[in-house]
Image (tube, rainbow, N blue to C red; front, side, top):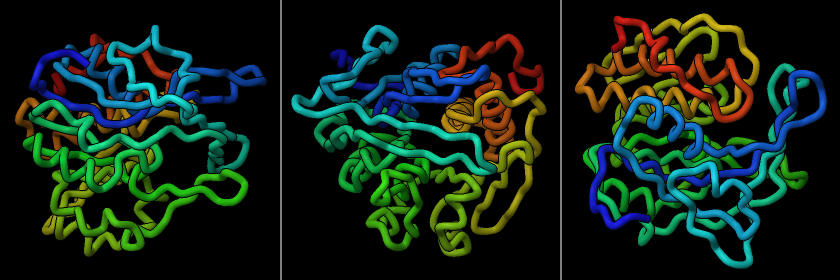
Length: 278
């Protein structure tokens, strides 16, 4: 970590080792984790940001990240194995990193992103983030995910987690359609804004009073991994510009669509951004 004390965006979530199916068969081993995907968007758009992450001694991609993770001795880096051969993807985890502690949060920020992939941002760290940032955005996957006996990922009900009592600390909660089914949306939307990503059908923006549908940007999908992360980064970019929630969601849809056109962490071509979203 650098000696700076503040930044526009603080990204809190671990880097991962991803094992993804390749287009021609076989598998691809690559850098993963929400922090990696989100950073790729912020790097492409010149957003002032920093990353707080931890990893195990086996972390293989230190040369590919601007902000290296804190290495926890005696641990392994979280590793996801993705199977896209079925109608809904199946994720398995065969290694998990340590959690990010409240004392790891050293920066003040305009926006902080709780972008855990699987519980590595514990409740006390989320509270600490809300104390150091004007707004906190969270990805529901980091709040809901658990593992079954075979290492497969499934979603707990939000009300069965300690995060249910912390919704007042969030400005926005992003959730996939599957994750949204694991929460009482009518109750959640009274406490924070909820954005539900719907793939090719765009997203739904829910507040206490309104429900808005926003269309997706049409692209040819190659790999859905990281689409939600890039969506969250795009939404954050809109907030930094002072845009209303609806336009933030439009920008988020565009960035999420760019992610699915490539395998692994994408190279975002900001030059292709429509003039209406510049």
